[in-house]
Every structure is written in C-alpha cells, then in structure tokens.
Amino acid sequence: MTHVINTGALVGEGWLSPAQAAEIARRSRETMIALVVNAVLTAGILAATFGMIFWLADALAVSVLGAIFLAIGAWVLVSGSDLFRMLGNAAAIIGAGMLVGGAGFELAETYLEVADIAMLAGGAAVAGTALAFFLRGAARFRFAAGSVALMGAAMHLTGLAIAIDGATGWSMAAALGYAAVLLAGAGVLLDVRLVTALAIVPFAQMLDTGTGYFHAAYVFYSPEPTLTILQMAALAAPGAWLAGRLTDRLGRHAGILAIMATVVGNLAFLVASLWGDTVGASFYQAPYDAALDWEQNLAAREAFEAQFVQISEHVFTLVWAVLLAGAAFWAAHANRRGLFNAAMTFAAIHGYTQVFETMADEPLAWALAGLAAVPLAWGMWRLNAYLSERALAA
Image 1 (cartoon, rainbow, N blue to C red):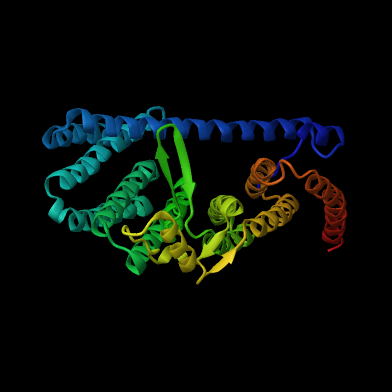
Image 2: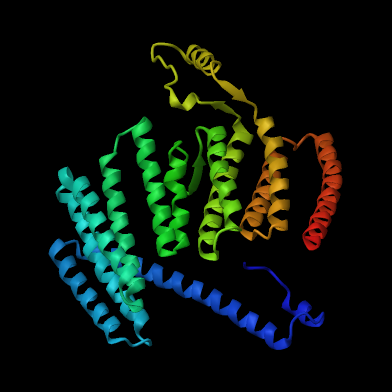
C-alpha cells in the first residue's frame, strides 16, 4: 500500500537509514515522472491522431497515412531497440488510431444507416484481436496492443451510442450500464485506471446525471439527487472495502471507482442541499398547458410534485455535513488518500456554499456549528487513538 510519510523524520528517529530514505525518494520521483511522461505521450498521440484525421478529411488519405505510421511503428518495435520503443509505440498507435478512427468517422458521415451495426461488430472484432495480442504477444507490443484494444472498445461504444439514440427508460439505462461495465472491465484487464474511472460517466447517466457546457460556464445536473446518492454509495462503499482486501493491482481499480463515485455522490449532495429533492418526479412528465397562464401551470406543477416524497434542502445540508466528517475521519484512519482528499475538498465546498446560501445572516447557526465541531474533533482524536491501540494489540 502507498503511504504518505516524512522520510527525514523517520531517519532522525532511527527507523530508516539515509540510504533507505534516498531509495524511497528515488522511487517516488520515478513514479511521478512516469505519470507525467505517460500523460504527455497520451495527449500527444490523441491530438496527432484526430488532428490528422480532420486535416486530411479524406478516407483514402487517412487510411494510407495511417498504414504508413502503423508499419513504421511496428518495424521499430520488432527491431527491439529499447531506446526508441516509446517512439515506435507512438507511431503504431497513431497509425492504428487513424485507421480505426477514420473508419468510424467515415461510417458516421457516409453510411449512417449501417454505422451502428458496423461499429458494434467492427469495434468488438478490433478490441478482441488486440486484446488477444495483449495477453499472449511479446511484452514489447503490450502497450500498443492495449491501446488498439481501447480504440476498438471506443468504436464499439460509439456504435452503441448511435443505436440507442433517442431511446428512453429501461433500454437506455441498460445500454448505459453495459457501457459502464465494459469500460470498468477494460480498465481492469489492461490495468489503466483512467479507463476504469471513465466508467462512472455512463453509470451516473443511468439516472440522467451529467454535465453541460454553456458559454464560459460548466454545469453539473442531477434530476434525481437522492437516488444518485444511493446509487453512488452502492458503488463507493464496496469499492472502498475491496480496495484494501484485493491484490494491489485490483485494489487500485476498486479504489478509483470508489473515489469517482464519491465525487459524483458529493456533487449530487451539493445539488440537493441547494434545491432539495422531489424523489422520482423526473421519471414522469410534469403537466403543462399552453392555454393556461403562469400561475395556473405553477399550481398544476405543485399538485403534481405533491404526489412524490419531498426532502428539504436543509435535511441534505445536515446529513451531508455529518457524512463528510465521518468519511474524512475513516479515510484518514484507513489511509485512503483519494477518499480523504475528496471528503476534505467537498467539505470546503459545502462550507463555502452554505455560508452564502444558508447561514450568511444567521450568526446563531455559525455559533452552534462551531461549538458542535469542537467535541466532534476531540471525539475523532480519541477514537483514532483507541483504534490504533487496538490494532497494535492485535
């Protein structure tokens, strides 16, 4: 398990030697550098691939240039030179991306009537072939093969998106659930946590939770915040539990899913703490009659919403604060840095939001909240000491 430690203090206390501390620092630095290099490489590959596809804007030209890049990359990888392996991988992936991506754009623009079936089948075939090569091929080809497998999965999911365009209800939810499982499975199998994390997007969209962009504004919307909170809790809780009990490789993926579910769940809490929730109302069409005036339509809407369970924004505000305090304490005690960072970040957001939305002119609420926080902090301190002593005794 990865821990946050002060190696200087451990050396001073005699727990580590200077050489051991230097080795820990070196490995930490190498890990961070690898993350930066992989991020820059991935961004460069994606930009180059899509840039050339749109710049050439011709199926034949994209195919020819893609094949050239793929051949050059494969030749470099086959030659076995470690010095240029990164360049070979980049060329091969750009070439494969141009072929797969170019085919996808051509199908969507020219052959839309069969694009869904072609992408579903073609993407599955590409992903399956590349995955077999990833699992059984030489180690030098694993990076490129895994990347091509993801391209095939992306084409497959694009075909699914075209096929379900306009669908609603259970059919849409089932398709989104399938997409979430596919992304999570691909991420785990290829050991790419970014792909695993992306599974949260279709999973959240099963309840129409999502994001939007307007001019100079990004928004998060959750038409069913209560159900979204429960949905995310159903993913975050087992994910956090499994993160410390599975192997390190699988535990990292369980942990990233727990973190992403925690983020979306907290965002749903933010929405509900501002507006409250009429549970289940978004699944039905609210009444509206253009022949009626605004007040009559408002009365009809209020009568419609009265049929559903309504939860006040103040309930969410209080429950959210309690859960954030508990989550931060547990994450700190269990050394779950990602969950701890998420809890502390949203605690700051929650506090900032409520100061201006709820308690700006309520000094007594400030005083009561502050007084309640003091024994809460003391209780957390003593509970952590008790749990630590109990763990040492065991």
